[in-house]
Length: 548
Figure 1 (tube, rainbow, N blue to C red):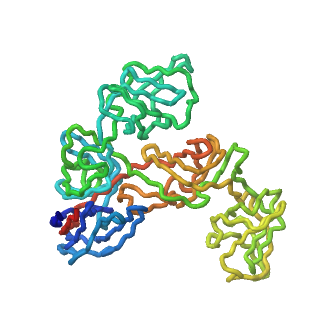
Figure 2: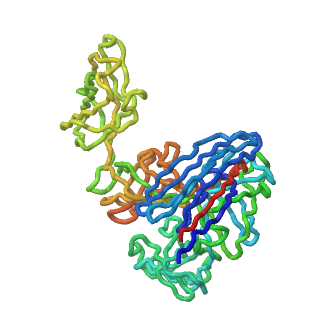
């Protein structure tokens, strides 16, 4: 007997938080009609903007298509904008799934850098990157905050470590953890002695430089009172002498599990709610910290985490080797120009003669320091001297490919358009600065990456290589692309930006996996969410039609 479709009406009423919010996804076995949606400006003297779109995702490939319904429409004070006034059909089939998203562009948006959540009381202390300018009692919205949630444990005296296998067996008392779940160990959570120094020194573990520091560790074995985790990326350890746990050295509650239970989910708030500032620390205008009530979650520890980054892609030759001890790779080196250097403005070719053999090939790239070459030209009958490249020239601060080589000369093209627009007269080389030409070292593509914001360490998967601990590299600006949880992984961001500490920096590497990946420290990041005064609220009506 056929079952008649069942209709169900839903009303959405949520504040519009800074960043991206996923408002609704069609349930399995349902076709939905979005009947009406509007956003109201509930701020005072504000002019926020809103973007609203439908996303259709292919269930087989994961590819998505965003259809913008309205983009960055401004909402005047005490007014509203109608997003949908009619029927927008949304569906979930074996092939596709539909969802709707909203993004608010608001004033006074602050970046959250830490949240201390007290699970018995539900009070959260929120730290911001800059002054928040909020007042006690002011309604606010928050989004993009990431928690790991679970219970705390203390390392007991039956804890053991095998440096040959890299397996750490933690005595944590009675627990319900399972193989495959993950835990995190706080830095310096316990102490060991070892026979390398005859047991004379107690060593804290994990140190900030250890692979286990700040990382989620997968449980490989359990008993009723112990769990076992792998704490090395390469085995055996460099120190394989017997290690002994120092009695009573375990730090209280220094181990946490990552069960995603508690307030809502690991991405909080989800679904979005409105909140109110309870109190602020210091004075309005200087305070970076406030408290708010999030709601109780008895028995569940919530650990704030900076934004989780997901690698998307890397550009070709994103990583350059600056110095190395490997015989299979080339370090960066400096060259000096000398007499015989010549420039032809008609074809844009610069041929540089070096003071010695340069070992360049047509697979290499070079960078010529600004104002390092001096020329005269017939345009003013050689009356004045001009340095090259100037900051306005096409090759200023750029790597350019080598096109022709001989033992002590090489040629590069320095013009984007030929002949030269300004001056095609004969140019005469006068002088050049020593070590003003940089030859690039070996370059690598990046095929995968993970970033630990708490330690600042990034792992770069390069493929086959012979790099060694202590070698140095440079990451090209904007060559790596990531998404992050602050906006639900909705937008892509390149790295390093010109303002990042790693931009242009020479970074010392450690081998992560031999012949595959390396580790470098690019700086810590505490950013992990947004906060803003409550300015916009959405209301929507949805009709769900069950077809099962």
